[in-house]
Length: 177
Image: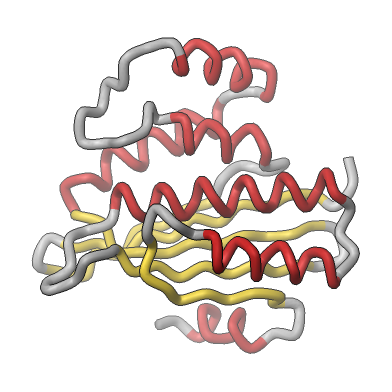
Protein backbone atom coordinates (compact mmCIF):
# COMPACT_ATOMS: atom_id res chain seq x y z
CA UNK A 1 0.00 0.00 0.00
CA UNK A 2 1.40 3.38 -0.97
CA UNK A 3 1.63 6.07 1.72
CA UNK A 4 -1.00 8.15 -0.14
CA UNK A 5 -3.41 5.21 0.05
CA UNK A 6 -2.98 5.04 3.82
CA UNK A 7 -3.26 8.81 4.26
CA UNK A 8 -6.66 8.85 2.58
CA UNK A 9 -7.95 6.45 5.24
CA UNK A 10 -6.79 8.63 8.13
CA UNK A 11 -8.17 11.95 6.89
CA UNK A 12 -11.12 13.51 8.74
CA UNK A 13 -13.01 14.13 5.49
CA UNK A 14 -13.57 10.40 4.97
CA UNK A 15 -17.21 9.81 5.94
CA UNK A 16 -17.75 6.09 5.34
CA UNK A 17 -15.43 3.13 4.82
CA UNK A 18 -16.70 -0.40 4.22
CA UNK A 19 -14.72 -3.58 3.82
CA UNK A 20 -17.30 -6.19 3.13
CA UNK A 21 -18.38 -9.23 1.25
CA UNK A 22 -20.23 -7.90 -1.77
CA UNK A 23 -23.47 -9.77 -2.29
CA UNK A 24 -26.61 -8.98 -4.28
CA UNK A 25 -28.07 -7.62 -1.02
CA UNK A 26 -26.17 -4.47 -0.12
CA UNK A 27 -29.01 -3.01 1.94
CA UNK A 28 -27.16 -2.92 5.27
CA UNK A 29 -24.23 -0.92 3.96
CA UNK A 30 -26.51 1.17 1.72
CA UNK A 31 -28.63 2.04 4.76
CA UNK A 32 -25.49 3.03 6.70
CA UNK A 33 -24.37 5.20 3.78
CA UNK A 34 -27.78 6.87 3.52
CA UNK A 35 -27.84 7.46 7.27
CA UNK A 36 -24.45 9.21 7.11
CA UNK A 37 -25.64 11.38 4.22
CA UNK A 38 -28.76 12.26 6.21
CA UNK A 39 -26.66 13.16 9.28
CA UNK A 40 -24.51 15.39 7.07
CA UNK A 41 -27.69 17.01 5.73
CA UNK A 42 -26.80 16.22 2.14
CA UNK A 43 -29.61 17.40 -0.18
CA UNK A 44 -31.93 14.63 -1.35
CA UNK A 45 -30.96 14.87 -5.05
CA UNK A 46 -27.25 14.69 -4.27
CA UNK A 47 -27.80 11.89 -1.76
CA UNK A 48 -29.67 9.98 -4.48
CA UNK A 49 -26.77 10.38 -6.92
CA UNK A 50 -24.27 9.16 -4.32
CA UNK A 51 -26.47 6.20 -3.35
CA UNK A 52 -27.01 5.23 -6.97
CA UNK A 53 -23.28 5.31 -7.73
CA UNK A 54 -22.63 3.25 -4.59
CA UNK A 55 -25.11 0.56 -5.66
CA UNK A 56 -23.61 0.37 -9.15
CA UNK A 57 -20.06 0.21 -7.77
CA UNK A 58 -21.07 -2.66 -5.48
CA UNK A 59 -22.76 -4.50 -8.37
CA UNK A 60 -19.65 -4.07 -10.52
CA UNK A 61 -17.48 -5.37 -7.69
CA UNK A 62 -19.75 -8.37 -7.23
CA UNK A 63 -20.04 -9.25 -10.91
CA UNK A 64 -16.42 -8.71 -11.92
CA UNK A 65 -14.53 -9.86 -8.84
CA UNK A 66 -11.86 -12.48 -9.14
CA UNK A 67 -12.86 -15.79 -7.57
CA UNK A 68 -11.66 -16.25 -4.00
CA UNK A 69 -10.67 -19.61 -2.60
CA UNK A 70 -13.27 -21.00 -0.21
CA UNK A 71 -15.38 -17.83 -0.40
CA UNK A 72 -19.00 -17.43 -1.33
CA UNK A 73 -18.85 -13.71 -2.13
CA UNK A 74 -16.52 -11.10 -3.52
CA UNK A 75 -14.63 -8.90 -1.10
CA UNK A 76 -14.59 -5.17 -1.71
CA UNK A 77 -13.51 -1.93 -0.11
CA UNK A 78 -15.58 1.21 -0.45
CA UNK A 79 -15.07 4.70 0.88
CA UNK A 80 -17.00 7.93 0.72
CA UNK A 81 -15.20 11.18 1.34
CA UNK A 82 -15.74 14.84 0.78
CA UNK A 83 -13.95 18.11 0.45
CA UNK A 84 -15.30 21.63 0.10
CA UNK A 85 -16.48 21.16 -3.50
CA UNK A 86 -17.21 17.48 -4.04
CA UNK A 87 -17.92 14.00 -2.76
CA UNK A 88 -15.72 11.16 -3.87
CA UNK A 89 -16.54 7.48 -3.90
CA UNK A 90 -13.79 4.91 -4.21
CA UNK A 91 -14.30 1.20 -4.71
CA UNK A 92 -11.56 -1.42 -4.84
CA UNK A 93 -11.52 -5.15 -5.37
CA UNK A 94 -9.56 -7.96 -6.99
CA UNK A 95 -10.40 -8.82 -10.59
CA UNK A 96 -9.10 -11.51 -12.89
CA UNK A 97 -6.13 -10.11 -14.79
CA UNK A 98 -7.57 -11.26 -18.11
CA UNK A 99 -10.54 -8.87 -17.57
CA UNK A 100 -8.40 -5.76 -17.10
CA UNK A 101 -8.35 -4.76 -20.78
CA UNK A 102 -12.14 -5.05 -21.07
CA UNK A 103 -12.74 -3.00 -17.92
CA UNK A 104 -10.21 -0.37 -19.00
CA UNK A 105 -11.76 -0.02 -22.46
CA UNK A 106 -15.26 0.37 -20.97
CA UNK A 107 -14.12 3.05 -18.52
CA UNK A 108 -12.14 4.96 -21.14
CA UNK A 109 -15.16 4.85 -23.44
CA UNK A 110 -17.43 6.25 -20.72
CA UNK A 111 -14.97 9.07 -20.07
CA UNK A 112 -15.15 10.21 -23.71
CA UNK A 113 -18.95 10.63 -23.79
CA UNK A 114 -20.81 13.78 -22.91
CA UNK A 115 -23.83 13.47 -20.59
CA UNK A 116 -26.48 13.65 -23.33
CA UNK A 117 -24.74 10.87 -25.25
CA UNK A 118 -24.60 8.74 -22.11
CA UNK A 119 -28.33 9.09 -21.54
CA UNK A 120 -29.04 8.04 -25.15
CA UNK A 121 -26.50 5.21 -24.97
CA UNK A 122 -28.09 3.98 -21.71
CA UNK A 123 -31.55 3.84 -23.31
CA UNK A 124 -30.17 2.14 -26.42
CA UNK A 125 -28.18 -0.41 -24.40
CA UNK A 126 -31.14 -1.20 -22.17
CA UNK A 127 -33.07 -2.42 -25.21
CA UNK A 128 -30.21 -4.60 -26.50
CA UNK A 129 -29.04 -8.07 -25.53
CA UNK A 130 -26.05 -8.04 -23.23
CA UNK A 131 -22.92 -8.51 -25.36
CA UNK A 132 -20.94 -9.71 -22.32
CA UNK A 133 -22.20 -13.20 -21.54
CA UNK A 134 -20.18 -13.29 -18.28
CA UNK A 135 -22.08 -10.30 -16.88
CA UNK A 136 -25.48 -10.47 -15.21
CA UNK A 137 -26.23 -6.90 -16.22
CA UNK A 138 -26.37 -5.33 -19.62
CA UNK A 139 -23.27 -3.22 -19.06
CA UNK A 140 -25.53 -0.50 -17.71
CA UNK A 141 -23.82 -0.02 -14.34
CA UNK A 142 -20.76 1.79 -15.61
CA UNK A 143 -22.95 3.92 -17.88
CA UNK A 144 -25.09 4.83 -14.87
CA UNK A 145 -22.00 5.79 -12.89
CA UNK A 146 -20.66 7.91 -15.76
CA UNK A 147 -24.04 9.66 -16.08
CA UNK A 148 -24.03 10.67 -12.42
CA UNK A 149 -20.43 11.75 -12.00
CA UNK A 150 -19.31 15.27 -12.74
CA UNK A 151 -15.70 14.36 -13.52
CA UNK A 152 -14.02 11.64 -15.55
CA UNK A 153 -13.93 8.31 -13.76
CA UNK A 154 -10.44 7.67 -12.41
CA UNK A 155 -9.18 4.12 -12.18
CA UNK A 156 -6.05 2.08 -11.67
CA UNK A 157 -4.91 -1.51 -11.83
CA UNK A 158 -2.13 -3.15 -9.84
CA UNK A 159 -1.04 -6.64 -10.87
CA UNK A 160 -0.87 -8.89 -7.79
CA UNK A 161 0.27 -12.08 -9.51
CA UNK A 162 -1.38 -15.46 -10.04
CA UNK A 163 -3.84 -13.94 -12.51
CA UNK A 164 -5.23 -11.42 -10.01
CA UNK A 165 -5.21 -7.61 -10.36
CA UNK A 166 -6.28 -5.06 -7.76
CA UNK A 167 -8.73 -2.62 -9.35
CA UNK A 168 -9.63 0.79 -7.95
CA UNK A 169 -12.28 3.17 -9.28
CA UNK A 170 -12.68 6.76 -8.08
CA UNK A 171 -15.86 8.71 -8.85
CA UNK A 172 -16.25 12.41 -8.04
CA UNK A 173 -19.57 14.22 -7.72
CA UNK A 174 -19.74 18.00 -7.36
CA UNK A 175 -21.73 19.25 -4.38
CA UNK A 176 -23.37 21.94 -6.51
CA UNK A 177 -24.60 21.92 -10.08
